[in-house]
Length: 201
Image 1 (tube, rainbow, N blue to C red):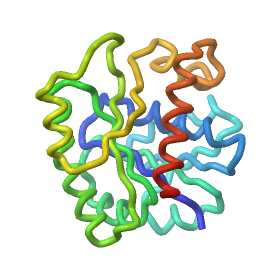
Image 2: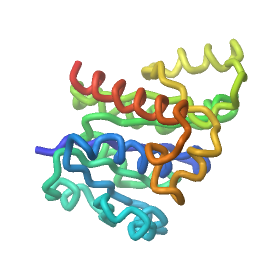
Image 3: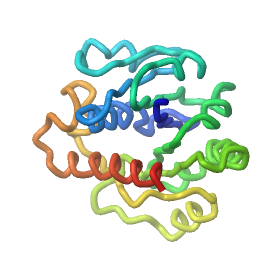
Protein backbone atom coordinates (compact mmCIF):
# COMPACT_ATOMS: atom_id res chain seq x y z
CA UNK A 1 0.00 0.00 0.00
CA UNK A 2 1.27 3.47 -0.90
CA UNK A 3 2.58 5.85 1.71
CA UNK A 4 0.64 9.14 1.70
CA UNK A 5 2.16 12.52 2.50
CA UNK A 6 -0.44 15.29 2.70
CA UNK A 7 0.57 18.94 2.52
CA UNK A 8 -2.01 21.20 4.12
CA UNK A 9 -2.58 24.74 5.33
CA UNK A 10 -5.87 26.60 5.53
CA UNK A 11 -4.55 29.65 3.69
CA UNK A 12 -2.77 30.28 0.43
CA UNK A 13 0.62 31.80 -0.23
CA UNK A 14 2.66 29.51 2.02
CA UNK A 15 4.31 27.50 -0.76
CA UNK A 16 2.39 24.21 -0.50
CA UNK A 17 2.38 23.41 -4.20
CA UNK A 18 6.04 24.32 -4.66
CA UNK A 19 7.02 22.03 -1.78
CA UNK A 20 4.79 19.28 -3.16
CA UNK A 21 6.47 19.36 -6.57
CA UNK A 22 9.99 19.45 -5.20
CA UNK A 23 9.39 16.71 -2.64
CA UNK A 24 7.97 14.49 -5.37
CA UNK A 25 11.07 15.13 -7.47
CA UNK A 26 13.31 14.32 -4.48
CA UNK A 27 11.69 10.92 -4.03
CA UNK A 28 11.11 9.83 -7.62
CA UNK A 29 14.62 8.48 -8.22
CA UNK A 30 14.05 5.80 -5.58
CA UNK A 31 10.27 5.33 -5.55
CA UNK A 32 7.32 5.42 -7.91
CA UNK A 33 5.68 8.73 -6.96
CA UNK A 34 2.34 10.33 -7.78
CA UNK A 35 1.62 13.98 -7.06
CA UNK A 36 -2.09 14.52 -6.45
CA UNK A 37 -3.82 17.89 -6.80
CA UNK A 38 -7.07 18.02 -4.80
CA UNK A 39 -7.64 21.75 -5.33
CA UNK A 40 -10.65 22.44 -7.56
CA UNK A 41 -8.64 25.17 -9.31
CA UNK A 42 -6.20 22.47 -10.39
CA UNK A 43 -3.20 24.76 -10.82
CA UNK A 44 -0.78 21.94 -10.02
CA UNK A 45 -2.60 19.50 -12.31
CA UNK A 46 -2.52 22.01 -15.17
CA UNK A 47 1.27 22.23 -14.85
CA UNK A 48 1.71 18.52 -15.57
CA UNK A 49 3.04 19.15 -19.09
CA UNK A 50 5.99 21.02 -17.52
CA UNK A 51 6.96 17.85 -15.61
CA UNK A 52 6.63 15.02 -18.16
CA UNK A 53 8.52 12.54 -15.96
CA UNK A 54 6.32 13.17 -12.91
CA UNK A 55 2.89 11.59 -12.51
CA UNK A 56 0.58 14.51 -11.61
CA UNK A 57 -3.03 13.51 -11.02
CA UNK A 58 -6.21 15.49 -10.47
CA UNK A 59 -8.10 13.43 -7.88
CA UNK A 60 -11.05 14.59 -5.82
CA UNK A 61 -11.54 11.98 -3.10
CA UNK A 62 -9.65 9.65 -0.79
CA UNK A 63 -10.98 6.45 -2.37
CA UNK A 64 -9.53 7.38 -5.76
CA UNK A 65 -6.24 8.40 -4.12
CA UNK A 66 -5.94 5.02 -2.41
CA UNK A 67 -6.48 3.23 -5.73
CA UNK A 68 -3.37 4.79 -7.25
CA UNK A 69 -0.65 2.16 -7.75
CA UNK A 70 2.44 4.01 -6.53
CA UNK A 71 4.94 3.62 -3.70
CA UNK A 72 4.40 7.20 -2.53
CA UNK A 73 1.54 9.64 -3.03
CA UNK A 74 2.04 13.32 -2.23
CA UNK A 75 -1.25 15.19 -1.86
CA UNK A 76 -1.49 18.95 -2.35
CA UNK A 77 -4.64 20.34 -0.72
CA UNK A 78 -6.72 23.51 -1.29
CA UNK A 79 -5.94 26.76 0.58
CA UNK A 80 -8.94 26.32 2.88
CA UNK A 81 -10.28 23.74 5.33
CA UNK A 82 -12.21 21.47 2.98
CA UNK A 83 -14.64 18.83 4.22
CA UNK A 84 -12.37 16.09 2.83
CA UNK A 85 -9.37 16.96 5.01
CA UNK A 86 -10.36 15.05 8.20
CA UNK A 87 -10.68 11.75 6.32
CA UNK A 88 -7.55 12.42 4.28
CA UNK A 89 -5.59 13.20 7.45
CA UNK A 90 -6.77 9.95 9.05
CA UNK A 91 -5.30 7.94 6.18
CA UNK A 92 -2.09 9.90 5.74
CA UNK A 93 1.25 8.60 6.89
CA UNK A 94 2.59 12.12 7.26
CA UNK A 95 0.95 15.57 7.25
CA UNK A 96 3.21 18.48 6.42
CA UNK A 97 2.13 22.01 7.37
CA UNK A 98 4.25 24.75 5.77
CA UNK A 99 4.20 28.15 7.42
CA UNK A 100 6.07 31.39 7.12
CA UNK A 101 7.95 32.49 10.23
CA UNK A 102 5.89 35.52 11.23
CA UNK A 103 3.71 35.64 14.32
CA UNK A 104 0.44 36.02 12.38
CA UNK A 105 1.50 33.31 9.91
CA UNK A 106 1.95 30.83 12.75
CA UNK A 107 -1.34 31.93 14.33
CA UNK A 108 -3.07 31.04 11.06
CA UNK A 109 -2.20 27.33 11.23
CA UNK A 110 -4.11 26.65 14.45
CA UNK A 111 -7.23 25.30 12.76
CA UNK A 112 -5.19 22.98 10.57
CA UNK A 113 -3.26 21.74 13.61
CA UNK A 114 -6.53 21.14 15.47
CA UNK A 115 -7.72 18.87 12.63
CA UNK A 116 -4.38 17.06 12.65
CA UNK A 117 -4.58 16.43 16.40
CA UNK A 118 -8.10 15.07 16.00
CA UNK A 119 -6.80 12.65 13.35
CA UNK A 120 -3.89 11.56 15.56
CA UNK A 121 -6.27 10.96 18.48
CA UNK A 122 -8.15 8.46 16.27
CA UNK A 123 -5.11 7.12 14.41
CA UNK A 124 -1.98 7.44 16.59
CA UNK A 125 0.24 6.11 13.80
CA UNK A 126 -0.27 9.32 11.82
CA UNK A 127 2.78 11.59 11.92
CA UNK A 128 2.75 15.35 11.34
CA UNK A 129 5.04 18.33 11.41
CA UNK A 130 5.29 22.03 10.72
CA UNK A 131 8.03 23.24 8.40
CA UNK A 132 9.16 26.86 8.36
CA UNK A 133 8.99 27.83 4.70
CA UNK A 134 9.90 30.91 2.66
CA UNK A 135 12.02 32.17 5.56
CA UNK A 136 14.02 35.29 4.83
CA UNK A 137 17.78 34.64 5.04
CA UNK A 138 19.35 35.79 8.30
CA UNK A 139 15.95 36.39 9.90
CA UNK A 140 15.63 34.79 13.31
CA UNK A 141 12.48 33.53 14.99
CA UNK A 142 11.19 35.82 17.67
CA UNK A 143 10.56 34.41 21.12
CA UNK A 144 6.84 35.01 20.56
CA UNK A 145 6.82 32.84 17.45
CA UNK A 146 8.87 30.12 19.13
CA UNK A 147 6.52 30.11 22.10
CA UNK A 148 3.46 29.91 19.88
CA UNK A 149 4.89 27.00 17.89
CA UNK A 150 5.63 25.14 21.12
CA UNK A 151 2.09 25.74 22.37
CA UNK A 152 0.49 24.24 19.27
CA UNK A 153 1.29 20.66 20.28
CA UNK A 154 2.66 19.72 16.87
CA UNK A 155 6.19 18.74 15.88
CA UNK A 156 8.39 21.51 14.43
CA UNK A 157 10.74 20.09 11.82
CA UNK A 158 14.42 20.93 12.11
CA UNK A 159 14.72 21.70 8.39
CA UNK A 160 14.07 25.30 7.40
CA UNK A 161 13.28 26.22 3.79
CA UNK A 162 14.52 29.70 2.98
CA UNK A 163 13.06 32.25 0.60
CA UNK A 164 15.15 31.57 -2.49
CA UNK A 165 14.59 32.62 -6.08
CA UNK A 166 15.48 29.11 -7.26
CA UNK A 167 12.71 27.61 -5.13
CA UNK A 168 10.12 30.24 -6.05
CA UNK A 169 10.84 29.65 -9.76
CA UNK A 170 11.17 25.87 -9.48
CA UNK A 171 7.70 25.16 -10.85
CA UNK A 172 8.83 26.83 -14.08
CA UNK A 173 12.36 25.38 -14.17
CA UNK A 174 11.68 21.64 -13.73
CA UNK A 175 12.37 21.72 -9.99
CA UNK A 176 15.07 22.76 -7.54
CA UNK A 177 17.12 19.60 -8.13
CA UNK A 178 17.71 20.77 -11.70
CA UNK A 179 18.93 24.19 -10.57
CA UNK A 180 22.44 25.27 -9.72
CA UNK A 181 21.43 26.36 -6.23
CA UNK A 182 23.15 23.86 -3.94
CA UNK A 183 21.75 25.42 -0.75
CA UNK A 184 18.20 25.05 -2.06
CA UNK A 185 18.89 21.45 -3.08
CA UNK A 186 20.30 20.68 0.37
CA UNK A 187 17.24 22.16 2.11
CA UNK A 188 14.73 20.20 0.03
CA UNK A 189 16.74 17.00 0.35
CA UNK A 190 16.98 17.52 4.11
CA UNK A 191 13.22 17.99 4.32
CA UNK A 192 12.59 14.77 2.39
CA UNK A 193 15.02 12.85 4.61
CA UNK A 194 13.48 14.22 7.81
CA UNK A 195 9.98 13.23 6.69
CA UNK A 196 11.18 9.69 5.91
CA UNK A 197 12.73 9.42 9.38
CA UNK A 198 9.52 10.59 11.05
CA UNK A 199 7.36 8.18 9.03
CA UNK A 200 9.71 5.32 9.91
CA UNK A 201 9.88 6.11 13.63
